[in-house]
Image 1 (tube, rainbow, N blue to C red):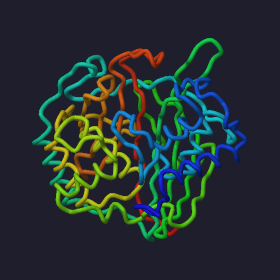
Image 2: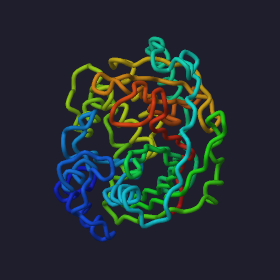
Image 3: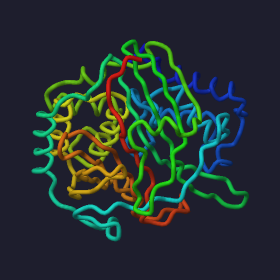
Length: 361
């Protein structure tokens, strides 16, 4: 077994292939049918698991969190759910409006420079260090996220990109076993807000459920990360298999991705949150977008990156100004590309963290 209680990348690909075949998906299906330009079905599986070093952030093997679900089997479930669903099909929704930030409105999000983020990130680090851990009893880490992600629909003669809203309820037990429930997300209000309130997501239609055995995850990964910033940075870049460890926007992109994965898979201790914002304050390309009301109606602070390896996208972390915890993330397409029929500027994906607590089960 490798780090985080996982098998090797080839073993994971074999597992994913078995998941594909068990679900009844023809393994010889051409990926281009689904708007994915790959050389073979094996390339599709390798791309899903990030084994090839051709992703924008340089991740070859995303140990610890795969997409929003954090597991090999969940990655297979999500991919198969999009390509050949065996659960109830998720409903697509019209793209939500872009949020207005203090220093970047929806109208100028593609070119607004923002401001230097150093002072604000250090303030958020101090706030995080003084905040209390999440409430709750028990030792199971329970995290609920509302996620809107892109799906490519093959509409005979054309490719259509739609956004799929999906609620994910993740429970990670101390033994590394995991339960992941996917629910149908609801359309947002005209303002781009209106995510479900605490507990109301249990009433949303269930799309599927995945139960993973013990040792599928390292439940203590977040709490065991280094406590000093240089070693923390090195550990996250190594874990992300980032193609750069230099102070450049490529490594910043990797760190943004890894931070989002941390908060959507594990409960992040306040002191670790403090170290993360201190770390990000020294990275390249980080800009302050200022205050924002997030999609759940909470006050947040937007921290932005336009990376040199992905200039068509503006990546945003939204952090609570009162707790220093991550509230969510947004990826905004700021340059129209030939690979998508979406016209910039537009929301590509977003994740809002709705609940983080310890539970008994």
